[in-house]
Structures are given as C-alpha cells and as structure tokens.
Length: 490
Image (tube, rainbow, N blue to C red; front, side):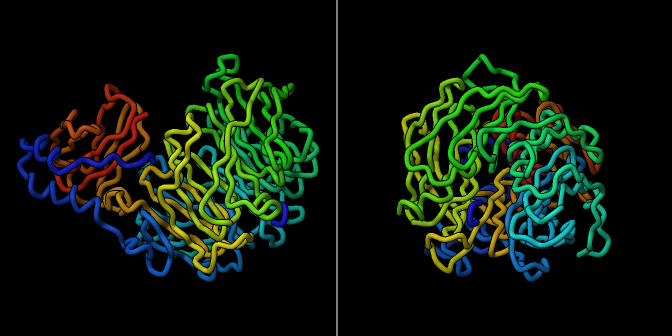
C-alpha cells in the first residue's frame, strides 16, 4: 500500500420430498435440510449482527487483536489439511503471524503465533504451497519465514509461541508474496531487488527455496497474481502467466521460462492513482482490479476496474463498477460468480459478477467488520479469504479475525460436525471420516435434488467413495441421513 464457494445451490423442500421418499428417515432429513438454510450463530437481523452492519451475511465469531497479542492486523490466508479436511486461518499481525483452527468456526481455537523474524510493522503477507506457509514483511531484514503447517495438527496447549522451520535471507524486506501452487513457486514482490519485481523461488523442496531468477518490471510490483493459464487466448495455454499490479499500470508477463521471462503487454485505465491488486475471473477472461488511492484522489465511491483479457497481447479496459460507499478498496478475490472485496471501513462486500460480460456487477451482500464508519481511510478490513470449501469467510484487519458466512449457507457446511469430508474440492475419490459414529449410509444429491449416488456401509469410522463419474459442479452429501455437507467436484 502507499500510505498504507461456490454459492450454495438451495434445494426446495418439495424437491427433497419428491427425491428422497425412499429414505427411511425422511422426516429427520428434511428437518436437517430446512433448518440448514435458517441457522446462524448471530444472524443478520434487520441489517445488524451483534452490532455489525450486514446484509445477507451472518457473524460466526471473532478473535480480537488483544487475544492474539498484537496491536494491529493485516493480511490473511488459509490452509485446508489434506489429511482430514480441517480448515485453518493464517492471520498477519504487526508482530507476527497467528494460526487459528476454524474447523468449528463458531468456536475457533487460537493455536498460537509465529513471531516476526525481526521488527514489527503493519505490513505482512503470506501464501501457502504444499502444506507450508511463506511469510514476508516490510520489517527491515525480515526475509522470508517458512512454517510447516502440519505442525498445527498437534498443538498440545494452545496458544503456543511457534518457531520458524526455515528462513530465506535472499532479500531484506518485501511488501508482498505471490504463489502458484500448481508449479511449486512463490514470488516475493516489492523488494529492493529486480526493481521491485518478482523473485522466482522454487519451493518444491519446501524448506530449501532455490532462487531461479527474477524479473525487473517497468515499475515496482505492488502485488500480482500468477496462474497456469487456461483462458481464452490459446497462444498461452499451459503457460505460467503473471499479472502484475504495478502502481501505475497492469503488466502481463510470461514467466514459464524463469531464465527468460517475456513481457506480453501492459495496460492502463482512466484516473490512475495507485494500481493495487487484482484477480482473474475463473474463466480467465476478465481481470478485476482495485486502485487503492482513487477514492481519496478523485472523490469516487469505491471503484473497481474491469479489464477484458481475451487477447493477452491486446488487453483492454472494459468498465468500472462503483460501490455504495466512499470506503477505499483493498484486496479482492473471485470464487465462482462472486467477487469478495475487503473494503477497509466498509468491511466485506460481496458482488455478483455473473453478468460481467455485459458490464454488469451488483452488490448482493456485505458484512461490515468495522462498524465505526464507512469513511475514506485506511482503517478496517485489510483482507478477506473466501476459498474454504466450507464457505466460511475470514476477514482480517483492525478488528482482528472475524468469521462470517452467507445467511443461506447450511450449518453443516460451517460447523464442526462429527464427520469430516475430504478432499473438497474433490476429483476422483471422496473420503469421509468420523471420530465416533460409524458411517452407515452416504447419499449424494445434484443441484436438481436428484439422488445420483447412494452407498451403504458397515460399521467403519472411515470410508472412501469413487466419484470419478460425477460431473464437475456442486453437490450435497447426506451422511447417515442426519448430516449434510456441500461438495465441490472438480
């Protein structure tokens, strides 16, 4: 900075009655499904949830900065344990990085903190690759901390003070870090090297990063997204593409060959103040950008800039979306047809982008974790993390860590149940485990409410199901006719 789930497809009760008449316990199943859409720990009622302004999003819990032993919060990310599907939040603080078990988001467990490598600062950023988190900071001589997230499985007496598993000292401070888990690289940006452009760090051996070069962009790279490209421009299919938000422009670079990165194109937009951060739509056709200074410099309401990247060699400015308040936008991410924006004083804003091709974006909900005001300043929500399969949303910043969920989202999608289901998203096989109750029956429903897969089992606490014949999409999984969970199939 300068001054720095897919939406749940709901089944109607009539559909459930029609499609589940063969179930022995239809009454209890219907109660589970119908209650699922009404439950909230602290519901958004009349535009308020426990003192927080809201619309369509409920409060599950909050952990204060004081609880985490810090006087300021910043970025955040998440990790889902591939062993059991448990979800963990990673929260950036002024003096370190906090780890929180959010598998029961109503009762999250603060597991402890990894202290900063050197001094305190308001800037800290992290990304996850191969069950390790890589942490950078603008604190002097901080370098990059590496922490093995599997250590969070066995925290005997939380909160603990953790130690880093490794440290990379190839640069001093860094503003941000980008990752491509597909290729096993992380990319620190905003250092004093490579003109502020990205470092290319191979972390296939997680605790021993290897520098394979870097790229000196035309301007300091404040933030970026790196993808293995599968968008509409077939010239670059399968290439590793970086989209840099570089203070005064957006830069597109092919970084597949780390020894020979190639700039593809650059693009601008009207009323540039500070080109801050952006994210692709899931089809990689459109790039959604936030400018962190335009609300202050030009007096706009929250402005989001959209580019058409159908042709990476010739990207074009498409249109602007303006939010309902004058709050400054910070980090934004896309999941399905929704754009989740950390909007500083206005908190989390959720925007429907299903009609982005016709230059339409519509705010459909919000949870304002900073209720003091919606002013044009840098107080409030720094980041949101909307990528957990459960559908919970982590909000980090001046209010510590806040967990919210869509009001329509099932309790079984967000509460720690007696059953865990993983991986999620899944592709070929799905595992279900329980600590105490035997898994007797599993039914999978498609979005039309049709029971498309049913399996009966004996008395085992874990079962694996072949789902290779399921099409990509969203499903509801009923376990023992009492617990329902949402499944995403890749």
